[in-house]
Image 1 (cartoon, rainbow, N blue to C red):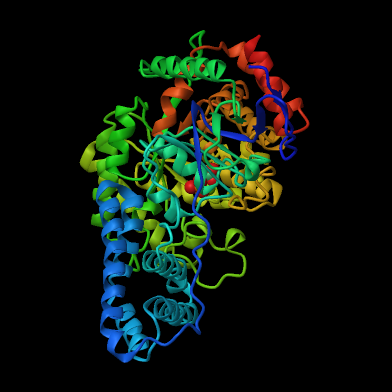
Image 2: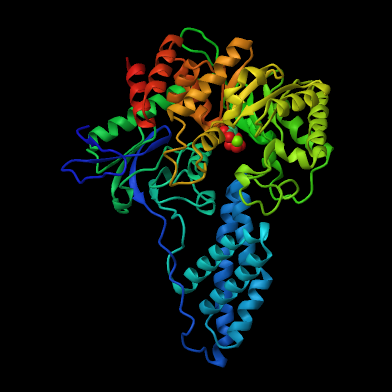
Length: 569
Ligand code: PEP
Ligand code: MG
């Protein structure tokens, strides 16, 4: 296509198609019209005319009707969704039917306010209450405001706020997407995502990966692309082409579809073209997820995020309940490798029964393995549950701890794991572990690199910050140097070192990681075939050359370009 790539953030109108560049997240090429989340709902101002006493009954009925339209709409979407998406949607639907909200609104209508003004005032009352309660209650403030906006939009005839549900398959462009926006996405109508903000570990990226939607984030110039414009999104190159030349665009879509069809034939096990084995595993959170991963040709589980099964719980789950959940995952992969991670509570994944409240800086606080300093029983009971599940399913799971930073912590953890006949390892999420990987491996049987947190702690940049996404880009050469240090230690010790952060989901970067000496890759089930099929097209020596040029590059963009050149080569 005759178009000119631009540097991120410097869009310039061109005579032909304009190519905007961002961070590629989920591969796939898609052509479609742009839709955008609708703008902010216009809230009524508080001093509108008083509703006459005779009309107040009808005004209450109007509120009830609007609230129930909103609740029914969200409940219908919840019924069609699964997992976390379904939970988010049905919680929001429940709020629209909340009796406390209804009676606060009715009181205001009785005093002469309109239904819309009353809805705004009543919502503000709950926002104040939840904010003063703090903790998990304070997190409901966003939900209350969301429901307020939906009801007011319904009452005042403004379109439904949030992500639209277009009739024709469309590409969603946004600044950034909130959990409630993405929870209801219908992949039949929204066929690709591109955001102005966000990085490879942003919320948008994680949801896009789960849904298998082509996705590019951190795209400069996206704000200027109007709704209705035709765009070509390339999730492997990381580009959004505005007004592409139709014939060339169709060709690229067709080529991508042919490549996707080839992926459907991926059966594993993962190897390079010349037969060097690389396990391609899946990141899962429960039994159903593990069964889906097995169907997607994952060779096993490289990361079972146990904390995700217990979100929203205020009490520690019993050993028996935990054992049942873990056994369901082990059962999905009989005789295969399953790596379970002990609770990674805290920071971006708080658990009410484990996370200390009110820490000034939770990402650097008592999270992951550090929770056991305060409550050692939480860890030992979890390990008992893992051992029980292993016995019940005759499996031999590997068990690793998150957020480890010293050799002493690793040695103590390994002893607890071995006492129970299990295989111990730790995650490499803090640079200290990569730097002393040889000494850690004296106590452990494996390491698994969590590139999401390793980049956060290497670059002192919040992994969830959209503004700092360029720093936490997994192609950063300094991050790759730490991966190389850990992988080399593994090779010296003859012990496996895998990657289970989002870096492992990028087929191009997967080749680099293998070249750095990584022995297994673990990613979302929807990425397994793409990674496995890509590895099968390159030999180990090419992966090693790709690793060399990526390490030598000055920044992520240069690293990607250099690696593409080597692999095209
Ligand atoms: C990581 O940090 O890379 C990782 C895999 O763990 P999580 O994303 O669950 O923190
Ligand atoms: Mg982590």
